[in-house]
Amino acid sequence: MANRIWIELPRDAYYTGEVVSGTVALQVDKPVDARGLALDVFGREETVITRQRGKQSVTYRSRADLLAWQVPLHGPGVVPPGLQRFPFQFQIPVYALPSYTGTHATVSYGVNARLDVPWWPDARASQAVYVYFARESVRTFSKPVRFWSGGAPDGPQVYVELDGDRFFARELIGCRITILRLGEHRVRRVYVRLVGGEWARAQNAEETTTSKVADLEIPMGTIKVGEPFTFEIPLPAEIQSSYRGTYSYFSYILQIGLDIAWATDLVAETPVVIVR
Image (cartoon, rainbow, N blue to C red; front, side, top):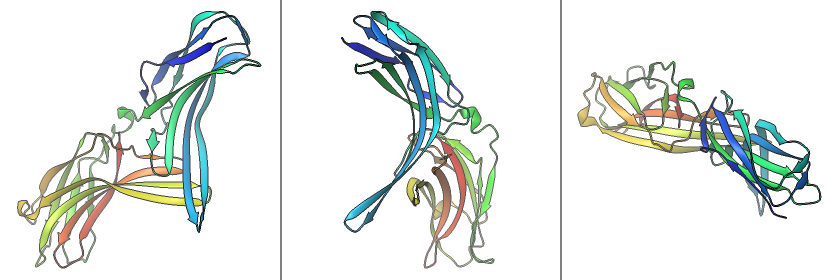
């Protein structure tokens, strides 16, 4: 007896709040007495941190279930031979986390179909589902951002203005900077860095990992001290989404730095939300 089962979805990527509609296809060669056919819908945040202790290593793990639903498709009884399709629907929660794969943390979603057959291997099928933030939930109320660098009260300073605090992959961040009180200091260049940071906790272990996502340099010869200078920062297409979960989060810091000759760099920075 050969039982075949598979999951049919129009696509594998969905936005938060969107309804997922699909079918579970089941094909059996002869009547099967089964306990039932069900679809499990899951969403899971997991963290894994490994610490080396001499010649041995210890691995810490934590997990939070974001979704744990079961959709019954066929009750106990005999499944007739042939090919049958069982439709299903469920909604991605509006406040779901985005799918994420990082160094120590993952956020994953998927569906598992199972025909429970007594005294015989169950027929199973799995399908991954990828979740992205809906655009209307992210930048509906975008607001300008203004921030200054630190440093001595009478020393060089950079004033930064952004056109918002939330952005999408492939977008351009509109930025305007004004360099003030340069005095005798010589600035060799202005650099812009977008840094992503992952924080993860697994049991009692914590890890933080950072990576440079975007890097832009502006020659000082194109900027006049005391006058606003406007430019755009392109965001990569394959950027990770900002999110905050139970055991992990991923966030971004935008840094505007002055490379000052014979002195410590002057840096202004602010958190921003970026969504893929």
